[in-house]
Structures are given as C-alpha cells and as structure tokens.
Length: 438
Image 1 (cartoon, one colour):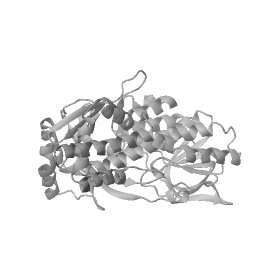
Image 2 (tube, helix red, strand yellow):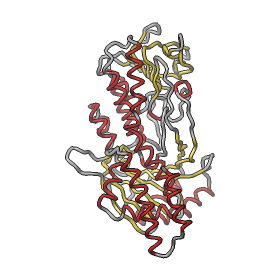
Image 3 (cartoon, one colour):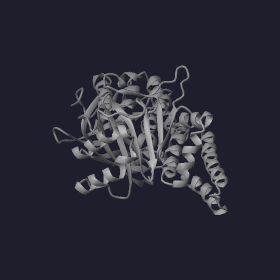
Image 4 (cartoon, helix red, strand yellow):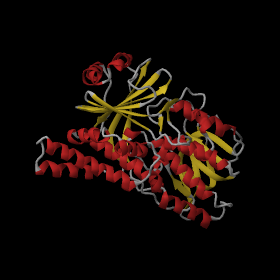
C-alpha cells in the first residue's frame, strides 16, 4: 500500500519514520508547505488498539490549527464534555471549560481515526507512503542523511535520503536511542475491554473510578461502545484465562455503576482482553544534524488522563511552525536551529500534561490522597474548573497545577485534623507523597 513510485536515489525534504498519529499529522502538515515527504510505516492496516482513543479538547484545538478536524469525521466519534469522578459510592461531575471557541473532546476507535489520517496522506501528491520496516538510520559525517528499510511486499532492502529525518515510531520505538538518552520506566499495564450497548451515569463523559482497587477509566468510543481501561502494576501483563476472568468480576464488577455491570460481565466472558504497557519516559533528546524525534518515541506519561495524543499534536504543530521559517531545507544551519528551538520549547506545551498524568497516577493509588483529591474537586468552583482545564489540555500553567496539588494535600490534611485522624507524622507524609507524585 503506497501512493507513488519510489526512486531510492531521490532525496526528499523530509523522511518520516512511522505513520501513527504524530507521523501522519507531521506529514500532512508539512506537505502544505510544498515539501516532498517520504513516510515509512511498518503496517498500514487498520489497527485494533486500546490506546489513543480519547482526544482531549486541547488536542482538538491543535487539529483545528492545522486545519485537520476532518480526521474526526465519519468514524462515529463521540463528543466528550467532561468527567464523572467516582470515589467509592460517591461521585462528582466536572465539565470541560465551555468558553466561546473552545471545543469538547472526542472519544473514538484509534484505528478508525488513524485511517482517516492515512487516507489523507496517501492522497497527497507531495507525500510518498511506503510500507516496510526501518532497520537503521543512515549517517554521514556525524549527521543523519536518511534511513534503510525493508520493503514489506518485495522484501528488498532500500535506502531513502532526506534533509531531515523525523522519528515518530511510537511508544515501542526501536530507534529512539539514536536521537535521545531514554530512561523508560514501566509503570505497569492497562487492560482494555469494550463495553457494548452499555449505559453510564453520564453520557458523553469520561468516568474515573477510584477505590480499594486499581483505578478504572471509562469513556465512549462509538455510539454503542465504551472503552474501559483497568490499571495493573507490575513488570508483566496480566495473563487472561478462567481464573483472571473471575478475578476481574470479583474485584471490579461491583465497583462499577450498576448500569454498566452487565455489559462488563459480558465483555469479560467474551474474552477479547487486550493489554498495553504504560511507560513513563522523560524527554531527553540528543541534538543531531539532520534528525529530530517527537511524540511517544521521545516522551511518554501515564495514560490515565488521556493526554498522549494532545502532547503528540503539540509536538507536531510546534516543530512544523519552526520549520516554516526554513524555506530551503538544504540550509543545514537554519534547519538545525529550528530543531534546536523545538527541543528547547516543546515542554511549554506538554509539561502540565506530563505532571498531571504522573501525579494523578500516584494520587489514585494512595488511600489518603485519593480521598483528598475527591473531596478537593468536590468543592466545585475553581477547584474543579481549573483542574479540569489542565486535564483538558487548555490550560498549560505549571504553577497553577502545582498549587492545586499542594492545595489538595493541605485540604486533605485539614479534613483529617478536623476529624481527629491526623498526627504530625501523617501531615508530613501527605506533603511528601504529593511531592513524590508530581
């Protein structure tokens, strides 16, 4: 599946490794500048995955700015207006900011969304899409000049040359060590099921369920399906089987809203259980002439808050805006400066997404902190609204986020003191746990 002839001696302006969300968006956006682009993707078939199925409003805005909201069309995508936070038998609904011009989020099947993007780049005359596996990056004089790949259909090994090679081969990247010094930490695994013909307490909302069990996240992905993700800590994924199915029912079924329990039990019995590793990967790029790395290949956070696609689209738009200032990609100095500026400033678009995701993951696993979190946002007003604006990817104020984390710990401590549950040791522990979480 490719959309034009390949001349292996031809030098492209840009070579993109990976046609996932970041790679496809990068190709589509750069092609508008008239750049000649080659994209190499291992498998162009529609994928069936449990990640990348919730696009926060901040990510929708990035699509708008690129002019590609059509990628959400005709895939039965469901608008998402906020979250229902469920703690034990209590719940509180927080809504995304509803200011003029600010969109909602969307839930959809990742494969359908991505195929919309791929159809677009396949039809673009400036983009050559190739199906195959990149085996190595090509260097000359300590600069990247392209990549070698094995064509999927012919099994031939071919070389591609470009002024700029962009690595966007996702969370399981095999090339990230060429352009970064990764310190990847495995937090555990998300286990995913599709709940069919299911009713949740709040339609068109995500649901975060906390309690004396691993956290669960549920959100709509089609008009009659909800994705449920359950977090499992550990270095190995859970092994589906009869005993595991019974464990799922015993541990999680009664923690769900009553209206979802039947659909959950049916999904468990059906047995179409998928798992995916949850990684924390701080961004530590290496500046190398002719190359750049972005998206999940460079930087990951826990997917609990659904911020991955928003972070990736932030990367894409920022890098493309920098590259617009370089009319001729043969100008290595200016091209290098554009990449250097991207690395120096990308955190401004992703740091709050990362902090919130990893911080909240620590909170939901601690009994004191998850109770404090629920009580804190249940106060409403700015305590819920500002927190939700950061979750939505609309507010990127790092100081505001950290103030809310500290405020949450302080509020929880005050509540325990009022209930005569706190000691000096517990007060100290609360602030230490928040510090560690963020």
